[in-house]
Length: 197
Ligand code: ATP
Image (cartoon, rainbow, N blue to C red; front, side, top):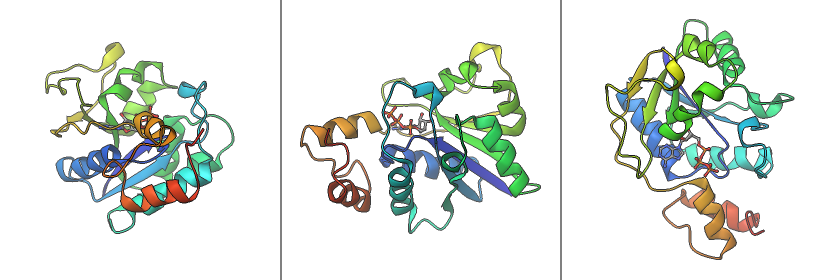
């Protein structure tokens, strides 16, 4: 069983995350994709996040109707920082025999050398990497940053020009986020008055 793991703040989950998950599902030959909302994001410590319960609820709303997508709340339930190697270790224990594929955008890949135990992450999972809008897209011959070595599947994904930062800014400015997040997530953000200040 090949299982994709897509970690993120999901503050909020948006069309880019869903496109990335679906592309990895198809191109990395996955049976499932597990969305893992981050607890304390030590790499983004200066950034205020919406409460974990609300970020998880938005993920649930966004993946409803995608039978091969699921959510794992282990990082938000764990005390302390969210380390991907610890998460992958736990997911592997839960699913003996599963082959894990860690899904990420190229911006996150660039930060990989600064993660906790990046070599261990690469032992535990192959990577599936997509470009982000404006970065020209990854090339098959591209090396991993920081001299790291591991198995990489470069995803061929048309760029989705949306980020959670842009969505938070739009909501705060009273602009529409229609089409940038699933409709149920847009309604939840409005009903819960998220990102207004
Ligand atoms: P923020 O704007 O708050 O930094 P974000 O939109 O980058 O957030 P995250 O939850 O931090 O979202 O991202 C989780 C993962 O999804 C990361 O690996 C990131 O690279 C990837 N990702 C997010 N948006 C896109 C997108 N539009 N295209 C491809 N990958 C994306």
